[in-house]
Amino acid sequence: MKITDKGLTVLFSLLSVASGSALARADEPSPKYTEVLDALQAGKNVKLILDMSRCNPADGGKPASATQAGLVINAFRVTVQNGISFANAHQTVDSTGHAVTEYIRHSLSREGKLTVRASKLVVGTTELVNQGEFICDLPEGAKFIW
Image 1 (cartoon, one colour):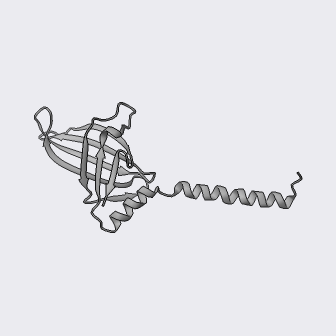
Image 2 (cartoon, rainbow, N blue to C red; image 1 turned 120 degrees about the vertical axis):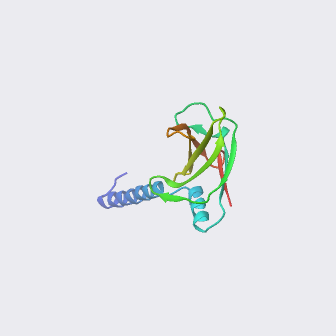
Image 3 (tube, rainbow, N blue to C red; image 1 turned 180 degrees about the vertical axis):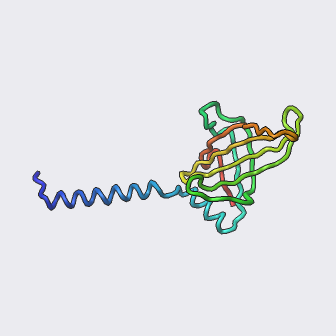
């Protein structure tokens, strides 16, 4: 089969358009991310339900315990680098009997993965203790409802 100069020009044009479309799609957020962002921006009462046994540690260790949790998103921030970020802080007593404040930060990436980072501060100290970082897939490990 003989390809003419005109045929090569058409072929390269088609390949350029196809590769440009693929790059544009790669930059687009996942449908789940878009749904959550749209709900938040519409002022809906968005809740997060977590099943930590279905989340994986960011460092590649064993999956988390069979803990389930939920929260209402009261405030959020959106950035290109971190996606949709929100946090929860609450006071409790840890397993050693010390009063602590726990800080749990969540970031939903544009790819649709939720990162959960937990830290605690023992009351009366200034040392923040990292309790772990986990990656949760939607909807298995993390589910947003409104």
